[in-house]
Image (cartoon, rainbow, N blue to C red; front, side):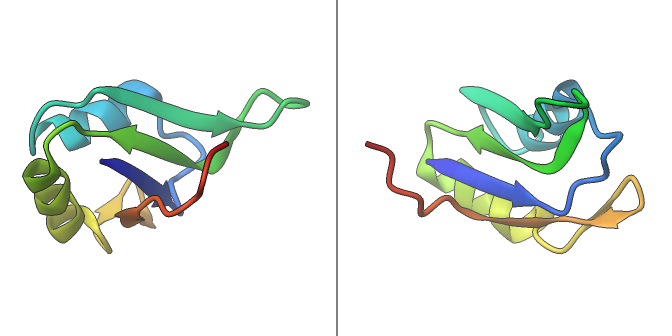
Length: 82
């Protein structure tokens, strides 16, 4: 299940994001969206977890939690990739 994580602190790294979600299960992939011009985080990213139960547990626990001074939002990614 692919999760969308929004409102991340610009200083949050992919490793920190991965560690946050690995506490709830296996993380298949973890990607921060970066600004092409500045090379800095845009404040959101995606985490993919193969087990739906783990992903749901992560959503329930981490949504609205404060991380590095920002209250993150975690939900199922609903974008349709072609």
